[in-house]
Length: 203
Image 1 (cartoon, rainbow, N blue to C red):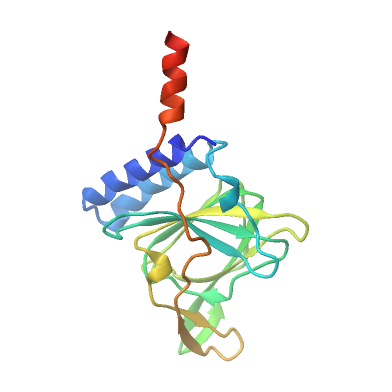
Image 2: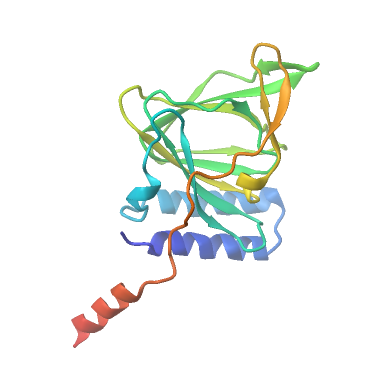
């Protein structure tokens, strides 16, 4: 595994949040950086690509020390999906492997209604969500016979944020906190093996 692409993405995102940009300015730059990350290979450790037998998994890859942004890999087994939910912060969803189907919703007169038709995202595609542009959706693996993986970037430590799930039949709303599936995060800072290899090549 080569952690350099993820490390560069984290550095870029840190610089963006340090600049204290408005969401409308930050998101296009973050989207470009995520697109570059998605185009790279061999940076996502296999332990953060493992699907669960019953439910999708949400692996934390990095969280800004001040919790201004976080990065996750979402792994969807065949046919797995989320409940209808919101985020309360901006987010980018980029497909790394496979394909995902997204259905947006909105609340109209206290009733949950579909917001447009379902959209299928393929590898390299990126979706943007936010309370400012539409924050409620459900996501599912577009395949019934293979795993799909997406890389998510949120404007906060989304695993600790109090959010909401929505009943698509009754429109009832209840709180939830997603947490994370993993107990460790990638070590993107130790690149000593690559540095040693470069030194050996020179000698």
